[in-house]
Length: 427
Image (cartoon, rainbow, N blue to C red; front, side, top):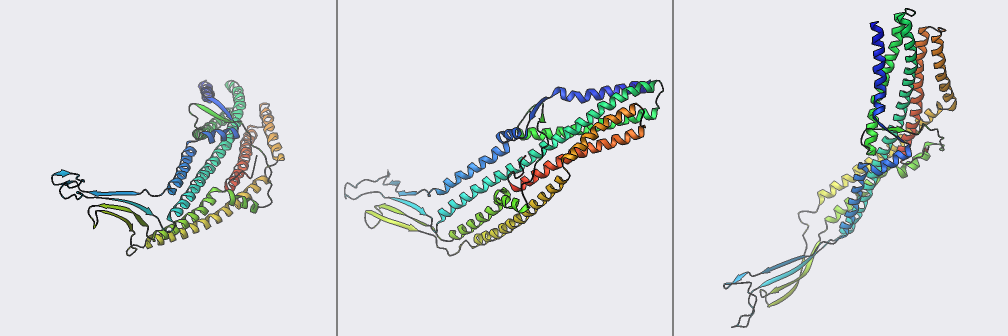
């Protein structure tokens, strides 16, 4: 009697726990395209990176500006018990006091200003590619999480359906066990299946919760909302005959690959700029000197420039030259990495496609129907408990493999899209 009470209590608590979370959450059903739209409109990391692009564009305008002219003045402050005496001596008729005024303008030589504009322009392209690469990474994570969440929900649904069917069987066995028609061993083995399913559902719930949290953060969704993937796993065909076709697309669209290439250009521009810095800039401008030169009113033109005797910028030039070589090596590695990644993703997709077809779906549908038939056969004592448990374990494995296979197909297609930089596999 104690075992019977414990069993009923156990099933009640489990049922309550399975339904409590769903009762407290609002469900938001989203298709993949709708999910991506919300993501693009609200993701704060993308917003922050877009500001970085705007900041880089502003630096182009800054680089176009000339240096401000400099006004210099020098004059007497106190003379003969008077401040700022700049009048005429009433006795001698000569001007009194002295002041000096000079305007200076810095003129950059060797095309430094134009080189700075080119570097600022290239840096803006770098910022844009960094934004594109961030978008590519976040989009790949978003789609992977979306499809993985879809699989976990399907697995949980299968586990809950199995639990529901076994629970009906277990309730019937409880009354039979109470009157001694079935053995305690058979009774506990069925109960152990329920406990195992309960643990599986709990683990799936935890994994789903973690993915929900990640998706809600990406979509900037707050509160106790459950995101339900409304789309299903989709089939597709490959329109490419070789990975070389995809590689050509990737070299034109993969932002990380483009980023490494344009970084080479930036370092080359910096090297050219550092060489230009070795050429002295010139400062010139008119000047006026009142009452302190060989004539009372002196007008002159001042010109100055540093003599490149001690500092010829050799260290910065050498450093910039090494930076060019370093970035060229990184770009070459990015090229090899891109070729290998595209080839690997393409081969994996072909491999997964071989085992994903319509006949496979028919097999899984029949296997699901067979589970109901096997359950009925056991209830009618047409098969033994050992045969039923063996089929039950196989059934769970087959269902998990089924959804895992569908998930793998979606993930490898997204991996190929990720390396290509655009959706070469469209669903």
